[in-house]
Amino acid sequence: MIWVLITLVIFFIPIPIIIKFEYINNTSSLYMVGIKIYPHKKKKKKIRKSFKKKKKISLKKLIRIIKSFKTTHSLFKPLLILNIDLIYGFNDAAITGITYGLLWELNRNLYNFLSIYFKNKKFKVNIKPNFNQSILEAKIKGIIFTNLVKIIYNKFFIFNHYKKRN
Image (cartoon, rainbow, N blue to C red; front, side):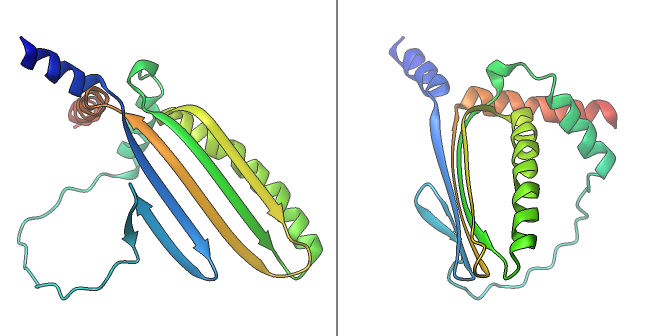
């Protein structure tokens, strides 16, 4: 009986997945749960020849899958907390001002796109234009709370939807 309870707890307790991306001084780095993923140390890889053909998903099929996610019940969507800090600038102040307006429009589009897949608990964007110099610094930190039940449900949802269309 206790093993059943432990299994249920493991399946339903949310797991935080922390993702952090930084672009500062023309160098980018990507961290996942505190481990640096990109850039990583280069290792010599053995060249393997594969004779299997991989199936490719066409753009139409991908759009159908994205549209079908809109109908997914919100109980099975992972929770997202996203914080974006952007400092940018161009040598021309007019271009910087126009870009500022475009970036705020992209902000709303990004929020709407992410709300298809996630329940957005906190979505914070700080955009700071620098009108005097050419600069680009970006820091993106996201925390995705999910559990094994949501992962399994979404995997079956995509698999069944993809299988029906073929």
